[in-house]
Image (cartoon, rainbow, N blue to C red; front, side):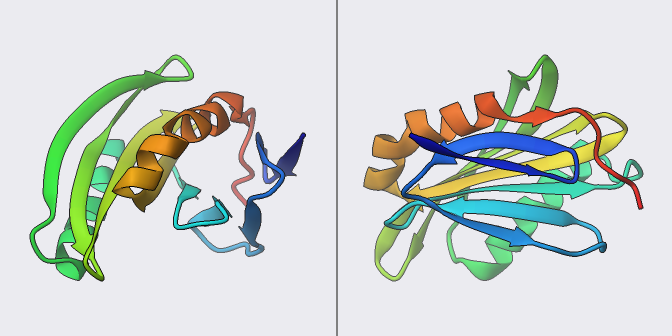
Length: 146
């Protein structure tokens, strides 16, 4: 079984034992995330069109680098929903745990989307297919620009 999210033009499925956090706001960015029962989470942020995907991914990398010492990053480009996404694969230590994070940004429907998948490294490998399944179930037909 799975949960389904459908709000502000965003639709996706997620495991029913994961917790949903929907930031109900009319402010940008619009955010929704699902948290695994452990350390992992998948997060979507929707930004207005004037945000460039490359810039947003770079700013996100900088935010992680400011927050955590010794962030290792590798630039990545990959197709998501027939759109080319840019971003980074990150590894860093937090509370003596190695954390893996994927940051991807792309244009869709006149909006800029930022996806972040993150977990302690061992859990990330166990949840990788779940993160991919959530992303594949993602359906963004129109994000309100109110």
